Image (cartoon, rainbow, N blue to C red; front, side, top):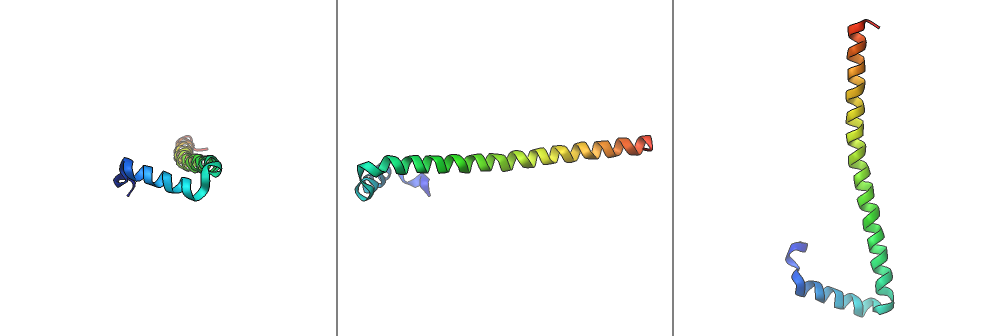
Length: 73
């Protein structure tokens, strides 16, 4: 969807945003959008890293259980 916008479409969107929100509100909206995007990216990374750590801890737990079975503890 966003791949088809191009430079003229992007300029049009920015001009419309400037007309609707005005020059004083536009930086605030940009900052809010940036911080929202940053939080979303952070949460996504935490989910991905959490799943990787969970898989790693599961493998460690299975290795410990196997070693306990071998030693008879």
